[in-house]
Length: 233
Image: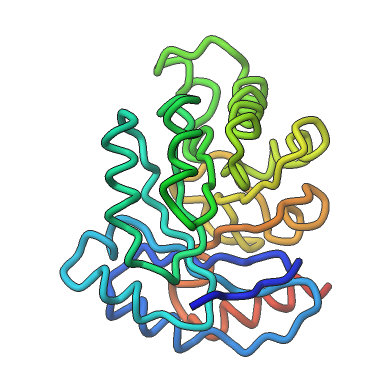
């Protein structure tokens, strides 16, 4: 099933939860008519690797699906993984990690009908963290370099924080989708490079955002109302 999203920016709801809670969240998504935005769903490890995960993904209708597997392995393994996902015909986007390398990313494009989203540096990491891993570049420069590689490989978009989004849009000319999104006043939790939805989508020119706990914790319907009010200010 093909989902048309036109040129609207996508608000991906992060379903990092059980299948039963995911169904509750999906039922709570309002019928939001907007010229600028539409809702999508991000499926992560917890659901996909749980019993019935694949069947759950196949059952989803009327939402663009972003399958967040962050593929990061040698070329053969990555390609075989993508081939194994071909039965998930309603998946519109799949993540691949930049660290898998240029050759693998380029090859991967030939083995999926989904659009590849290239993961750069996780929004849970800051300058101290990347230094511990072994990167000597400033974090902004590192992510700009990673985004450039993703563009060269033909990826549809990069996953980065809103802090880097505008620079990537201006200098690299590739779409950005930004996690690490919180509504005003919400807890940061394990995120370090965060933004509000409106800042990411307007000032930082992201093509989409990923928002989880700000919507899925507590009163879900009220959280959606807060999000829509925030976007329409």
